[in-house]
Amino acid sequence: MRILISADMEGVSGVVHTTETNPDKYDYARGRALMTAEVNAVIDGVLEAQPDADVLVADAHGPFRNIITEDLDRRVRLVRGRPRPLGMLGGLDESTDAVMFVGYHARAGAGPAVLAHTMSDGVLSARMNGRTFGEIGFNAAMAGHHGAPVALIAGDDAACAELAELSPDTVAVPVKEALGQAAAVTLHPAVARERLRAGAIEATRRAAEITPFRIWGPVTLEMDVWGATVDLATLVPGVERLPGGRTISFTARDLPEAYRVMLLIVTLGQVPHR
Ligand SMILES: [Zn+2]
Image (cartoon, rainbow, N blue to C red):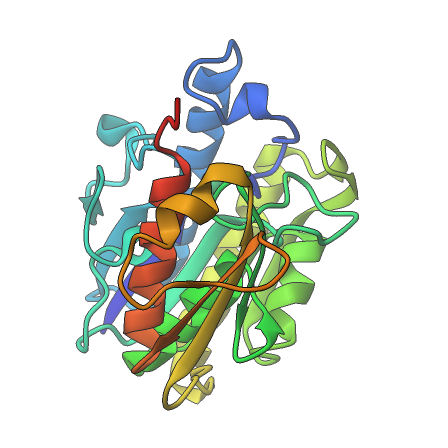
């Protein structure tokens, strides 16, 4: 059995502010230590339920270099650094039996939701075939495209609810209750880790029963983005600017093509414009 754990940081217990998630800020060292410990709790649960599982961890926050490598459970392999194929899901392929989302957060515009955003602060909204998705939805659909269900989600209550709309049978472990973009009632990290370990045991045992979330056929991708990102995005062949000026549209052959164009546009939005 092969499991891919995609680990973000905004949804980790105790974390409520960018000072704890931004490598340039004063509390980042604590944030990455909390993140590493939560991932270890999930790994421990997976390997308790399935001792011979092949576990891959994809560091999926910011620079993709947050997990403290030497503190990570030695029984897994780590996907680290960027840019890379499949972004937050680096390491996903047809052999992946299930994915687990740890430290995840709700989409841009959701609320109350801790540190809600969609890939970057420059994206106001992202839609596929008219439906709004955040990182949870895009990544659940990409996993589903490869035949893998989301077996576990951990994050605030808003993140858990967002995935439940797409995959109601996923094991959800809410580690904090959102009060706003930068406020929550959070479990103690030690308690969160106990619940994550137990959740991972259950998720590993139930993974095969959970239906992957899939988006079939061509995908119309629309994104509302800030300022110059629109100008950069429309340099990409096939990307159009819709009336109103802030929305770009791209019709993709299939979900992976839409996902790649979405990642490209997010990356263009992070390029300095002037
Ligand atoms: Zn993140």
